[in-house]
Image 1 (cartoon, rainbow, N blue to C red):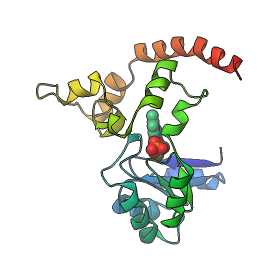
Image 2 (image 1 turned 90 degrees about the vertical axis):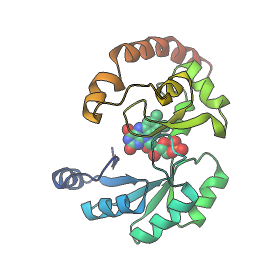
Image 3 (image 1 turned 45 degrees about the horizontal axis):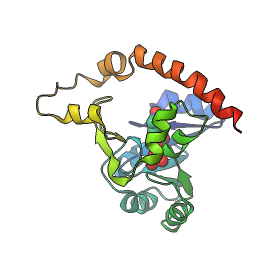
Length: 197
Ligand SMILES: Cc1cc2nc3c(=O)[nH]c(=O)nc-3n(C[C@H](O)[C@H](O)[C@H](O)COP(=O)(O)O)c2cc1C
């Protein structure tokens, strides 16, 4: 592993030191300029500027606005553009806005190597730009995912309040039963897909 990326905050000094002294590159994900600056102060080698379009935990600022703002704020530290990138034209746009490259996430969920079930992969491939939402249902922090009955339920006025992030990680974020189910589903579907290659 040549690079370690940090998200949801800048890494503490001892972690930065351990990673850098091992010869690895250190990256920091940000959703706004203030976060990028904290990563730079912590000593990262590169910044990943992720617009609100990005899958997973994400901020509120759109990629087209965020990328050049971060590029200017952290220069000469290189910036990778993330958030909604899925085509060559979008990569070209990112480069034109000053990024050194792009960083993609959701795209890889649709590959046969991903942990998704075939059904989940199909839902992602069929989804359009209006089909995602920033939901707090997973961890209590806004996270972009496909809108479904689960995310709608968490948006209802009588939905339970979120407990602290630390507790959600163990109690609600990834229940063991869900993981077990995913593994069971994945085993046959992966071998079927691989056989077609
Ligand atoms: C399912 C999922 C999980 C993710 N988990 C993490 C994570 O644990 N740590 C992290 O730094 N970024 C995570 N990301 C964000 C990606 O690193 C990346 O910045 C983002 O997906 C880019 O936007 P895109 O999804 O539009 O390509 C995740 C993204 C997705 C879709």
